[in-house]
Image (tube, rainbow, N blue to C red; front, side, top):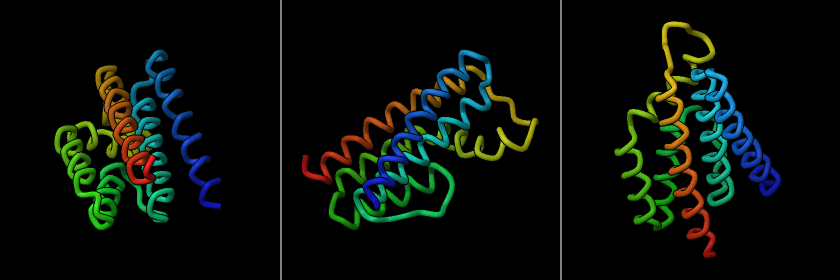
Length: 142
């Protein structure tokens, strides 16, 4: 069952990223940021289930990153945990923007997202997904 769940999370995450690119073209920057946020949540959930059997009921990219960092450190992958921490430190403002978009793009009109915000979010997602793929390969011994 977890293999099916992981596959579905990854499929949906990739779909959200494709949709985010389209939304940027359409000028829907708030929804593009929301799609990136949803994609990263699902990607992180997939990695947590696949590598550690950890299912989360939390929301937010930062919270999922903290859980993954903790799982990596506990399992003895301190180098990977450090790389993840470094990525968070170097991208905290965009992570905060993404977490904010979870509520902001749905329920408020007081937060304005720009094309630059959406492009930075997509760029961060690309970097994070590459790191998550490295983590998956290393932990699985591939």
